[in-house]
Amino acid sequence: MTDLVADTQPHTARTIAFLGAKGGAGTSTVAMNVASVAASSSSVCLADFDFSRGDLANMLDLHPPGNIAQLMNLSGHIDDNAIQGAVLRHLGGFDAICQPRALEMLAAPDGERVQHMIARLRDTWDRVLLDLGSRVDVASLTSVVEADRVVIVAGNRVGDLHNVQRILRLLDVLDQPEDKVRLVICPFRDREVSLAEVETHLSLPVAAIVREDHPTCRETELHGRLATDLLPDSRLAHDVKRVWDAIEGDPVPLVVPARGPWPWSR
Ligand SMILES: Nc1ncnc2c1ncn2[C@@H]1O[C@H](COP(=O)(O)OP(=O)(O)OP(=O)(O)O)[C@@H](O)[C@H]1O
Ligand SMILES: [Mg+2]
Image 1 (cartoon, rainbow, N blue to C red):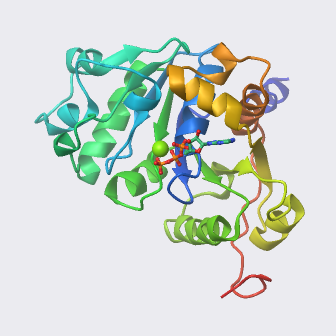
Image 2 (tube, protein in one colour):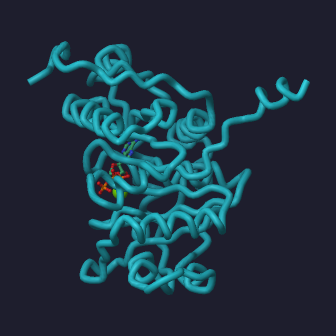
C-alpha cells in the first residue's frame, strides 16, 4: 500500500530553468506565462537569470526597487530583507526578480554566487523559475546543473534545432540525468520543420508546442500582462497551460543523437 501511494505521487520540479536555443526564441515569453499558470497552485518566483541582458522588467512592466545584480554584488549571505527588497508581485500572481534596466548595472556572478542565489530562492518560494536566456555562460551552466528541470525553448527552424542538438550534447557532458529535459517548440511555425522530423532527428520527444500567436504576444507585451490573465481564451494562454503540464508530467527519455543523419546537417 505504501509503495502504491509513493508511486502515484506527482513529480514536482521545484527549480525549473528555461534555456533558449537561440536569442529571441521565445524563452522569456514561455517562462513568464508558465510562471502565471504555476502561480495558481504554488508560490512562484520568476527570476531573470539572463545576466547578459535580461529584459523581464520591461516585458512585465515592473519597476522593482532593487534587482538581481544588487543581490549578486552583496558579500556573504543574501538575507530575506535583501531578497524582499528586490521582488515585486506581478498581476499574474507570481513574484519576480529582474535584471537592472540600465545595462551598465549588469553583474557577472561566479558559479558559487549563482548557487547561493538559487538556494536562497528555493528557501523562500515553492517553485523557482529561472529565465536563463540563450547564452552558455557560468550563470546558465550552474543553473542547469542546479535545476530539477531544464526546459529547452526552440523554434522549429533548422538553426534552432542545430542548437538544441548542441545543448543536448552539453547536458550529456555535464552528466545531467535524462529525465530533467523538456523540449518546448516555440513558436511552432506551420511551414517549418514538422514535429515528426524534429523528434526523429533529435531522438527527443517534443514535450509541448506553443503555436504562433502574434496578436496575443503584441497585446500582452504592450501592457506588461500575461496571456492567461489578459486574454485567457487565446491560443497562447491555451498552449502555455500545456507547457506547464509537460513540465510537471512524466519524464521523457533523452537519447543524445549521433552526428550525421540530419537531412539538413552541415
Ligand atoms: N508563440 C509566439 N508567437 C508569436 N510571437 C512570439 C511567440 N513567442 C514569442 N514571440 C515573440 O518573439 C519575440 C521574442 O520573444 P522573447 O523575448 O520571449 O524571446 P527570448 O528568447 O526571451 O529573447 P532574448 O534572447 O532577447 O531573451 C517577442 O516579440 C515575442 O512576442
Ligand atoms: Mg528573454
